[in-house]
Amino acid sequence: MKNFALIGAAGYIAPRHMKAISETQNSLCAAYDNFDSVGIIDSFFPNCSFFTQYELFERHITKMKNNDIIDKNGKCSGKLDYVSICTPNYLHDAHIRFGLRSGADVICEKPLVLNPWNIDALSKVESETGKKVYNILQLRLHKAIIDLKNRIERGPKDKIYDIDLTYITSRGNWYYTSWKGDIHKSGGVATNIGVHFYDMLSWVFGSVKENIVHIASHDRVAGMLKLEKANVRYFLSIDYDTLPVEAKEMGKRTYRSLLMEGEEIEFSDGFTELHTESYKEILNGNGFGLEEARASIQIVHDIRHANPIGLKGDYHPYAKQPLSKHPFGW
Image (tube, rainbow, N blue to C red; front, side, top):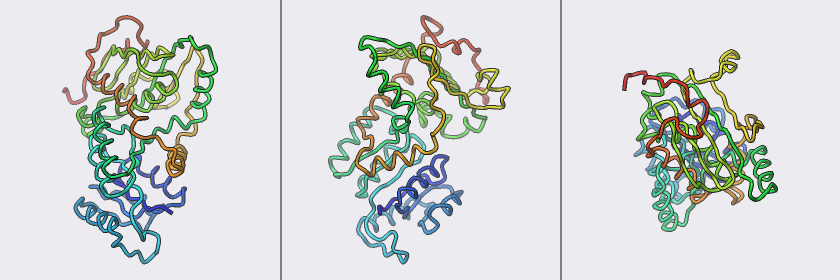
């Protein structure tokens, strides 16, 4: 049984990590968040030590590192093995460093970091501490995506596939008040909702040859990724108005589509179990580390800093939709 700590316990994605820790028969010994809306912990680890003050959390982790914790329940005795990170994107780098220097391996949500050079710096901290960073790249464990990768590898070596990726996940005005709406903290739409798709695409179809951005605004990004074995037109949006009519008529607020040569690649099912599968792989020594995350971090960094060319050349058809005003007039 391994001992875990979790940073960002009140976040949306944290329960999936708690569930994964529980389902892999391990213990969540300590958790931290500025906010105390963490009743979900009771469903998994009611005896977990929870902190809302970082200084007290750091003190507790230091005591665990020094093996100074005596747990009357006998489940969290011994040193800390892993720190799971579910905090806002811009804090990942600092919290990863904290976890490594606390003598633990680190499991971090996507995006691992915001900039490619952060990966280089974290690699040095890995070397200094002898500990390792793992990133949740769950689409690499999805059966449909694994089957697709195998299919491409068995296909013609010189084939360049035409791909359309569409992902729309509606967000309300709260989004722009939160850190998610601040491009300096979230990395913008491409980073916040797209990084796992870019990881999947580069894993399946190879490295980037050209990264073209057609449209980029507060609520959407559209462009073309030219990969070794695919030309990918993509459209990502958090604006409800960009949803297809049929999705709206069905009462849906999210739409996901991956078209390859006109064929729909279905991978919507099975998402909720992939965090547990990710943890199993990590605990078995097969997780995805810093270098596996590099390609997607480079892609979203380049998108964020690109100069959009507008509706020129081969662009995603959804890119033609009228742009929306920022809800706060920014």
